[in-house]
Image (tube, rainbow over all chains, first blue to last red; front, side):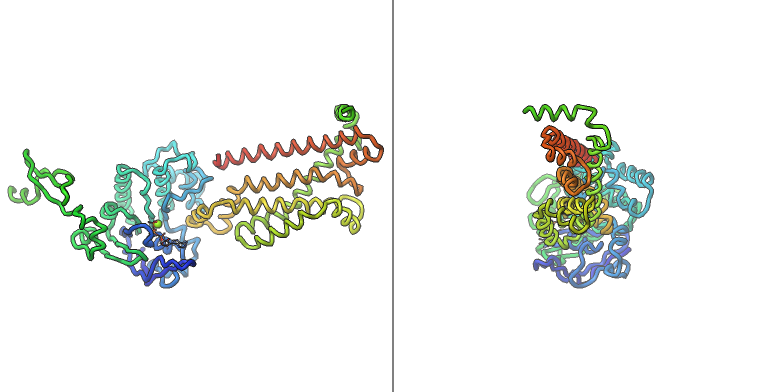
Length: 281
Length: 220
Ligand SMILES: Nc1ncnc2c1ncn2[C@@H]1O[C@H](COP(=O)(O)OP(=O)(O)OP(=O)(O)O)[C@@H](O)[C@H]1O
Ligand SMILES: [Mg+2]
């Protein structure tokens, strides 16, 4: 399921131009990351896909069908949406929150709960949490419930709005890996919003770097963007200008290399450099 | 003080509870009037209040009209209604409904409005229709306030239901008016105490159910 933004503009009633003339092709079965700082229009763009927001002008298309011609309730049920700050229903237990969409589309309670339990395991939630209410969970646990809920109806399209914002770096990496694993198996069309550059580089098949008002600073693969930032804005966002990503390697005493960034901050070690390996082969 | 002791003597005497005109029958009548008035009022006020809260439309109208209706004197209303429909239960029932509707209406729209926009946004984003948002999110989360409205209405009606006897219907008002006419102050007091007890018991039932609900809804 490919998604197309065609000259999309969104001006809120108070006059805020959140997105101006935005065009993007999101290829089927890939993960596109929208990367940009706070307030640049990422959530606005995402919510136009499931018609939580209707564009002021332009159109969003899914497989060449304008979403404006689709009934919003049906549309939302077949699009997984992981909301910024988890967005759980406070009066429903974890398991029922996860089962929301399958229940809406007619799954039996038993089936929906079985599926919800599987998903809890996949996102690394202890089964004992199933009977809790959202506010009895930590922020990170709530976000995982949000991710599990987004996957519950097995949607072809997944919209993820900073889904791992509230989890610690270790768990974050774990969840990113889990998402990659899910993506290898299921090949969904994902739009993933983040302002974390490392997360974007990890997950994106395609990265869209955004400036204020949803202006596209660069579109490309992670390699494209690191190797050839299109402009100063992108370079700055990546931290290239601050020498964070221009790496130096120094030989270590016992062999191998110590890698540090442009400021001399040590990043890690390389046991043997690739070209050396070639040389000795 | 003597009257009060005598009043309790009346209440504790099994004699005064038995028979067709005894406290037992009158209390059941009283309860029945209260329940009937609440059912009719709820049937009118709940749907209207829920829709006002859900859509936000007609809110100003609801606020103003409930304020106006609240200002009407109940006794005057009963007398007026009795002029049209005659002696019996209909006239006081009209007045009780008028009395109960504003509280129930206010509880209903306040309950729905108390649900944060962020929560209804979540419900919509998951693909709930307008009705599903109302039935599965707004009503459950607003239930404590909605029941609070019913609770207020119940207390008002249970106290005012004594006036039914004023135009020839039954209820504990019978005992009260009888005591008044025959200057039997212990009887009057006994009737008042019975009404107060009834109100306290009903209120306690509401308190209990509201607490239970909050727990069931995960709100505590
Ligand atoms: N309902 C609204 N009414 C008016 N302005 C809004 C509304 N929602 C968002 N905005 C404004 O539109 C702009 C884009 O908002 P949006 O939520 O899309 O940003 P974002 O990129 O998701 O930011 P963040 O990373 O902080 O979530 C912001 O300037 C915001 O203040
Ligand atoms: Mg956002």
